[in-house]
Amino acid sequence: MKSTACLLLSSCYKPGIVAGISQFFKERDLNILTFEQHSDEGRFFTRVEWEDDGRWKNQEDFRSEFQSCAVDVCAEFSVHFFSAKQTLGLFVSKEPHALVEFLARWEMGEYANTEVSFIVSNTEDSKVFADRYAIPFFYVPTKKGSTDHEAEQLQIIQKFNPDFIGLARYMKVLTKDFIDRADCRIINIHHSFLPAFVGAKPYEMAHEKGVKLIGATSHFVIPELDQGPIIEQDVTRVKAGDSIPKLKQRGRDTEKRVFANALSKVLEHKVIIYKGRTMVFE
Image (cartoon, rainbow, N blue to C red; front, side, top):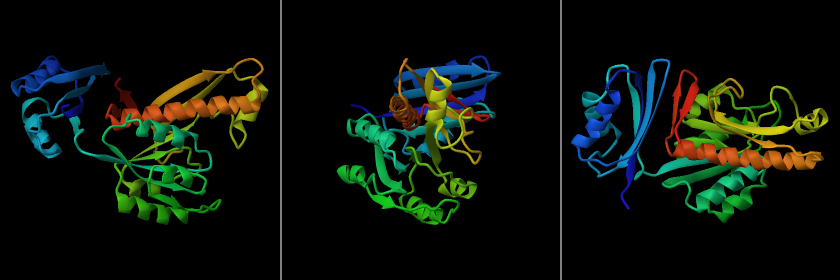
C-alpha cells in the first residue's frame, strides 16, 4: 500500500485556485485521493491528500516547488508526509477513561504512523496502562496553588520532543510559560457544563437543575483557560430517572469519544486554525 501525504492550505479566495492546485498535482502525475474545500469571508481553505511517490524528501522540498507554482502571496500552508512517524505525549490525572479509549484505538491501528512517546500523571493510577503498552510513564506529583511541577514536566517534553500533547483529563491548569515552552500543539478535553456549572461538582448541579444534555468539548490549549479553538464537540441525552452516577457515566462516555475523535482529526492533519477558530475537514 502506497504512503500518502496531505496539504493544508489557507488563502485569499480567487477564481481558478482549485484548478491551479489540481493542475500542480496533475502535471506531476500524482493521484489525488481527497480534495476538500471550504470558503468563508473571502478566505479559501482546503485539504488535499495524495499518493506519495517519494519525490519530495521533506516539507521544505515540497514548499519551495509548490509555492512557486500554485499559490499567491497571501497563502499559508503546511504539508505532512504520512510515511514519517509523528509522536504524541499524554497527560492524565486520576480519571483514566479518555486515556484508555485513546490507547485502545491506538492499539487497533486507528492512529497510523503515530507513536505514544510518554504518559505523565500526577497520580500513579495510570501506570498500569502505560506498562500494558510499554510506554514510558512519569509520575510527577502536584500541589494545589503551586507550579513547581512544571519544570520536571518540561524536562520530559524536551527529552522526547513530541509533535503533539494530549490532556486526557489532566486536571491542572497549564501556565502560559508552560504552554510557550512546550512548543507543540496541546489538545484538551472537558465537559461542556461551563460556564453554567462551575466548581468541583458540576454533575450534581446539573442533576439538580434537570439538565437534559451532557456535552464534551475538545480544543487546542491557549493561555486563556478553556478558550482555545474548538476541534470536536458532542452531546449525550439524559434520560428520565438518571442518577448522578449515571450522569457521570454518560459524561465519561462522551468525553472519551470526543477526545479520541479530536486526536484523530489532529493526527490526520485535518484541522486549520485561522483567526482563533478551526476549519475541520472530514
